Length: 175
Image (tube, rainbow, N blue to C red; front, side, top):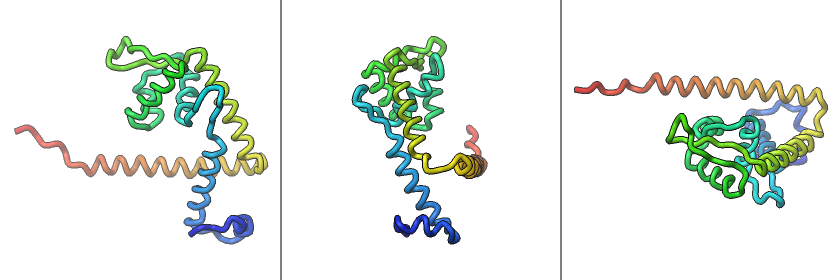
């Protein structure tokens, strides 16, 4: 079911179905992604995930590749590909972790800090533009509602994961 674009504001006074909410979330997510995407010709193509990596590295002196992988919730191969691109662009440095010889420590270099700053400014400007139609009170309400949904979904996801773990049969005992 697709809501007509002109009908959205008029329908706000009618009861809203769960399906309509899901459709609105999808449309909002599409516009947020479009409005928040960063592409700065001066620093080459910046992928959203590359910007996230730069932002995380900007908050720390260094981080292990394993920690970054856990924070981003992406596949190891995807992270490796992103890191190679960032390294080739001269934005990050990778070095062997002295504590864990199998792993790498990542850090921003000066050009990476500049790219991170540009990326952060772009994201702040886009966020201001995206939510400029809302009053402060509406932003507070939206934040509270989204926070409540996310907390419930994360709790539900954790409960499902735990239920799966509990439902697994114990490993076979060696004979």
